[in-house]
Length: 398
Ligand code: HEM
Image (tube, rainbow, N blue to C red; front, top):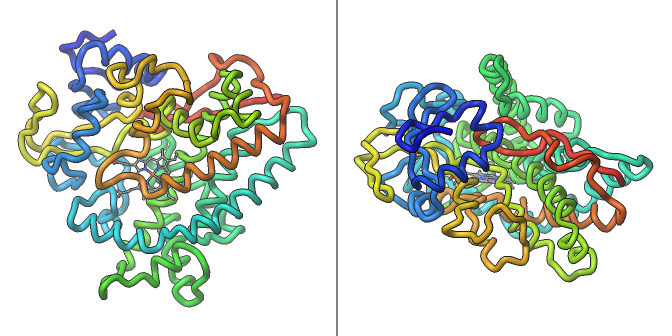
């Protein structure tokens, strides 16, 4: 294990069991010097209080113009699409959020509730004749993709391509950089065409609403629209799918809580919050840059340096959550988790992700009363990404 004073290597060995690695870091400090997989230095913030406070620190910026470290761009969008929510600080960010807020209405959420129920029902029907299923590929991924596509208004026949591009963009395979650029180009071309079609023939979806939205004479420009659609898809798809699979895993490995859900003694809302805390799908925030020398805890981070806030680590900080590795939906404080971020960039898709998870998991549990895990939880494989954590497969017996 890395000595506390040495930079933490965020390498393959770290990724083998990030929760164990974060637990070791909790024992030493809340802020650590680290080396990212691309070899570039980064400050890793792991303590709950520190992560939460950092999200509200006006001296930390998501805007790359404040970055001094070479090579810290990561998988960024083409330059014309870079002015999106997660690259923008207030007040430009406040404007974009207000415009999104006017399109992300409670009524639209209600319409999606029906669609989530319908798609979940169809997927469970498809699983029913079999004795086994894989929750990731048979339920979580297709449901999440269907919801995002319904939200944006992506036609059925384009959805397989959509899924392919998104998977490529999230991949950390050795040839991922080249394939990602190609996927990004394809996705860009597709979204420009889709927006053009929606502009000519609007329908009842978020993209049409974003095109139409006007806010005191303001509206989203063409590039902003494409970037927004891109971000909604990219931010929503894998994370929401990961949450469904981890929630199922949690209930199957903690049978007392599963029994309580089935008898109505435990709400799916509580289960969802605790699953978000216990295995946060988005492990890291997008990078922040110190606009000037910034103090986090007892550490001073020099201006221009790159900072990674770890939601996953904060959500298992023993100073904040008692017995943090235990999945316990009856704990009083699980909803203090930071799985959806905090502050100005708090996830606008949080309500949708919660809704989707509650419907998918409770429908599954009630439809298949004998549901059980095939094999042991320890043998399950997780995605090897620092940013997002999800199960590759979740085989169950129905
Ligand atoms: C379980 C599912 C999800 C998780 C865990 C999650 C997590 C997060 C987190 C942690 C952030 C803050 C990033 C930061 O501050 O660096 C964020 C932002 C964002 N999320 Fe989600 N998200 C989920 C689902 C969704 C969905 C379903 C959508 C869209 C439909 C979505 C769209 C976005 C967008 C657009 C942002 C940027 C907001 C901004 O910068 O103002 N997310 N999400």
